[in-house]
Length: 77
Image (cartoon, rainbow, N blue to C red):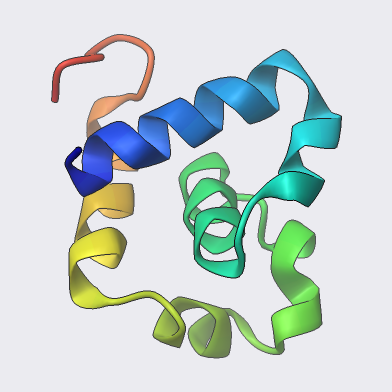
């Protein structure tokens, strides 16, 4: 499964029920928070840059593409 598909799946989980955010891995939490522009959700990891640094380049780029082009409007991105 591609990074975009994985992040989209986690976004849908969190949007369906905010409590699902707690069951995500650190990387998944950071990616979801980035897409939703909610860095307050990952403030425990330090600064925004420190949180982003925890993601690999593939996940960082995937999250950015999803945020730029929409995660609901373009589900096959």
